[in-house]
Length: 246
Image (cartoon, rainbow, N blue to C red; front, top):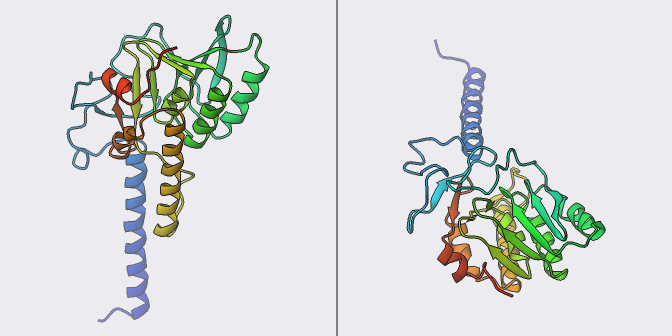
């Protein structure tokens, strides 16, 4: 007996919904850092040391730490940036970079006593827009940015690092870049999504040039998926201008 047309239509809709649901789940799994071996083969964990030509590592903020020897145990980094005084005019700025953090931290920097001169950074990254705004404020104030041995600055954090009028990166510190999301993930026509990404990347490249960083570092960022991180070698940090002197 032939199935009624309405039943065939409903069956087709159900199958379509199941397929879309499976794709969304798969996308969430990958974005969340749970890698599918058959989709992402051969990418080492962040805990494995990097070598020239072998610098891409799996990246799951809050779960993986680089294979370095930190000067202190960072514990669990906060989800939002936290500013704490360490010694005189030296402060620590660490944690994830959340939306709105730039304005909040700028207010704290302006109110801090004594006035900050050096910011020690440690962050898994976060909001690119906030990192750029905060980095420009750091440069306008003439602050120094610094990284300690064994600590890390990933994703959007290097843009804050780049804002330092002087950038001091100790041997054994870990700086990493990758592709970024600009804004919230939404279902948009491909044209608008591409425009947003291109606009965001253009802003980043202008910012890097203003900070004296070689925009060619973006070749590593653009070729590294968001769930991986490309760890820059010391010679690359010097080549692209992240390390600077008085």
